[in-house]
Every structure is written in structure tokens, then in C-alpha cells.
Image (cartoon, rainbow, N blue to C red; front, side, top):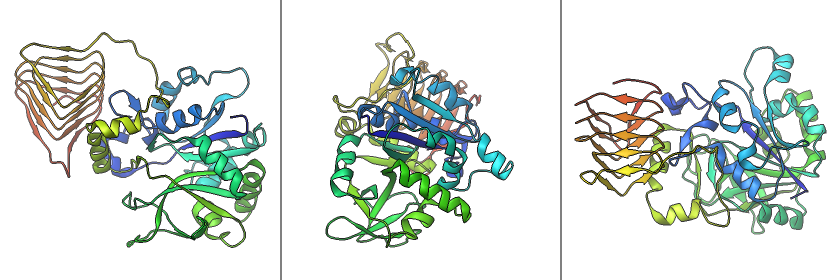
Length: 371
């Protein structure tokens, strides 16, 4: 899609993800057996024909750099355009060593990049959104409506506590932006994906920064509700904003439902990720693997039920794993018992250990730990 450019915000920190973001940004949190959170919105952009994407970075982003690389796995490794990783150097020059306070400040920090965008329109999106949406349809709806800004939202109001909500007119126009909101009845929840023209984006960045206004929600969606045409695009397909540990666990376990998997991974809109060649997974004849999502390269000799198992996981004989998420290269030793546990990458659970969490409060083991 030559008319649309992608900007992904990968700078936000979610403390409620706890151990999962000790060594990485939320954008690179592993999800669904072999993916990272950023893969979903990035793949939606690629599937829409977007060839130029900028990723705004800050914080502990080494894991994300390793994952994205040159963008080759998303067909974004190009001599001109393609995937561009945008560290926070300009922002640090503007404000010193302080962190990015909001989207408008993040955009001001990469203003020279924005000036060089070749397309007429830009789609802005957060990196922690698990979605598979036909962005080309959203773009065409934006052009047809004549809107200044089109915001993707959902009628499912159950979301993270920091979500924004819209009140809509009968024709889908956004009349009010509300946050935080304790009773969102009658509203639509924002998915934090916006389409607007490049020129409007530059004008808004200049105006907001000159007044030290850093929030896209407050300085644009709320302050300019009466001067800009703000239009909604309602998406009632699968959409998950992963910002808490409980939310991560629940949304991961939803993927054990075949209907949800088909919605997240339709054949005509594939989700791309970094390639890693692995042998096929081996399940011992005496082992049990029931109602699980299992990636390549695993060895299962014990019992694994109702679990998400990433690449390279080993479950020894006599071990019992139920309702768990085991990330890449986790080792579960003989006779260990795990229920409602999230084990980050390279975790080793020693022989005969018993680890018990709860579906509302899963036990989480930090990356590289031995327990």
C-alpha cells in the first residue's frame, strides 16, 4: 500500500507485566508459542502492503533489536525504506535522560524521520496489541469518510485499566474521548491504532511540543474533538492489549480454543516472526500431550495438558505440567509438578519440585532462573 506508512510505539513500560519485562520491553514479550507481541501489528501492516515501518524505541530494547534485526523475516529489509528502528537519541537531546512521557513527545523525538516519510498517510499503533486486522480496509474507510483521524476501536469494553473510551454518534463519529473510565457502558474501547495524513501529523507534533503537550489522547483526541473530524472504525474481531500478567495469561490460554486460533491466524493474513530452524517435536509413547499449543523442537516425555509450549522445551519423564506457559528452551526435570505457571526463557525446574499458581494469579519464573 503505497499511500500508508507505519509507526509502531515500542517504548512504553508496563510494570504490571512484572517478571516478563525485567529483561525486555513489552513489544518483545513472547506470545503464542513462537511469536513476540510486536509481530501481530507489524504483520498486519505488512499484510496490508505497507513497505515502510518505523519502530520508536526506548528502555531495555536489546531483545527487540535481536528479534527484528534487519526486518528480513517481514520482507522489510530494503535499500530504501523498509524497517527503521528509531532509538530515543533525539528525545534525550530534547529532555535529557528522562523517559518519553507520551506519543507526541515520542514523535517529536523522531521528527526528522517523519519529514522523510514518502507516503501521504501514516498509521500509528502500539506494539502490545495482539490483533490480525485488514488495515487496507481501515485505510479505505478513512479515505471514504474524509476524516482527519480514524481511530480503531471495539465494542468490547473489557480491557486494561488504562484504556481510553470513545462515545460515538450514529454515523460513527467520535464525539468524546474518556479516560480513565470506571463505567464504560455505551462506549467503545480504543485499540490505540490511528490513521491520519503525514502533514496533519507534523502539524500536530509541532503544535503539541510548542505547548509541552505530550499526550495524543489529551492534546489531540480530547482537545481537538470540536475542530477535527475524528472517525471510528469498529473492529469486533479478536483484539488483546497485553498490559498485565493476568491479562497475558488469560489471553494466552484463549489460544487453546481452535476458533480463536483461526481468527488470530487466518490463512490469508499470516503472522510473521523471526525464523528459527528446529527439528520436529518428539512426544514419547509413554508421555501425554493433551489440548496444548506446542512449537517445534520440543521433547515431551512426561504429562503436558492445557498448556502453551514454546520452541525447544524439554519435559522429562514423570513431570506433570498443567495450565502452564513454558517459553523457549525451558527445561522441566523428572517428577516436577507445575500448575498455572509462566516460565520465561531458559528456566530450569529441578527434579521433584512442585510449583503451584492460580489462574487469577499465575506463578511467574523470571528468565534464566533455576528453581
